[in-house]
Length: 102
Image (tube, rainbow, N blue to C red; front, side):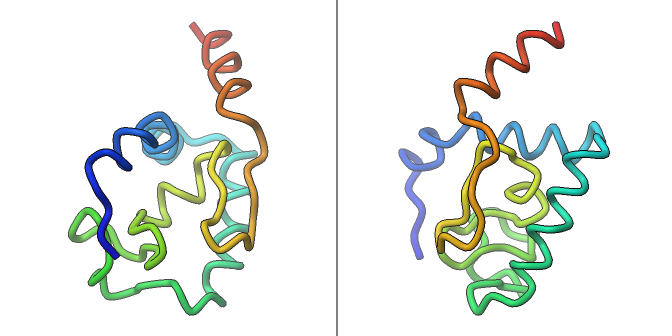
């Protein structure tokens, strides 16, 4: 697995969303994250050691995309690359919801 800077840049909003949601806790997001992690915990693509993580030390991560599961599972506009769980809202809707917070 080799994630390019171009791929990271393309997904920057979802990455920031996951990081933000892991810092600013929300009961609904935490519930979604817990359900998604239960699925990830049964997946062969889960890397607990960190060999496939894009950011070293961010394990557990997904070997398919290299994302930290702590962040990926908290991004409501993100889907599992293995199609085991999907996004809850579109990126456009997520942007609209974020603009209401300001």
